[in-house]
Length: 387
Image 1 (spheres, rainbow, N blue to C red):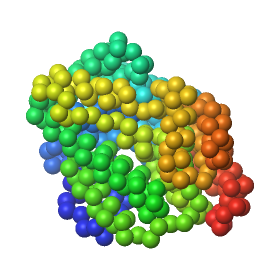
Image 2: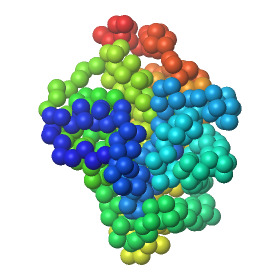
Image 3: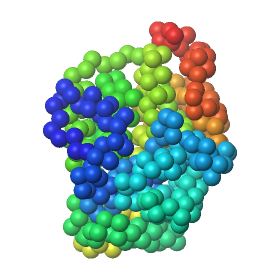
Image 4: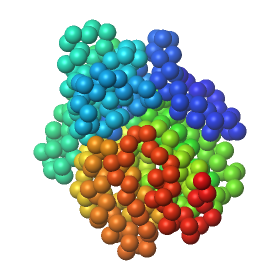
């Protein structure tokens, strides 16, 4: 799956190609003899996966993979992304994985774990599964619990990969991901400056979730060099709030309307940068595991796991920092948490003179004309929005 050396002029294309072939490239890596660990949700520490000598692969929805069996096992009233991921597991498309870790970042992730665990009892071909049960209450007792969960996941990874995590391997992994975060921050500054599109930014964040960290930041470095030479876009600047986007379909649709998606508050994008840890926090393994659990405990604020006020203030602060002209809050059907935050977001955005709109409980197969109608009052004030 390694991208190899990336020429600056090829970087954005390489990231886009990777985006559409993440699972296939991971399968090739497994066929070459390297362990690949899949994960679902935002709260699975990638640093531990890499420290155990495995390639991390964040699982995502894929067209046509939401089988009738997956819908029957999970029920209809769940985020459709969960149907798609479980459908891939049931179809044997992910049997090459050394294991799959599920986080408790939302109810859909948790339900997928329960179903997958039960299925594993009767289907030996399915990868083993593990729940990383991190919580986000700001209490010392919760942090202590999270530390035990991180330690338990580290032990599980050792069994899956046959490589015990050491002080040296964990520090090296934490350092690599810290450097990767810095590179992604630089990419976001170019995005704010109109030189990197929202969809291209999603591609880079996905690279960070599906490549070894050294390969990922080589790709991001090259993309930053690419984008530094691009003329700044003067398109209307939209900030995306709401359901996580594990594909670029909606972003490219918004860009087709002539807008620039300058930022977002979901964990397939900028929210991922809120998880930061210090690789030099301790000289022993237990101390580094505690630092890693602290970083994920404080990461966020995500819609399902944070207080409304905390999330609304973060969203508005990021929208202002990006020079946003309009905020779109867009939620998928059965992903209700982001919409609960919207009333307070709207109030704080109005105080900052930033208009906003809510498109709630949207189907997975969205209609571009509906988005155009929702944005019409804003787009009419600009040169964008021609269908």
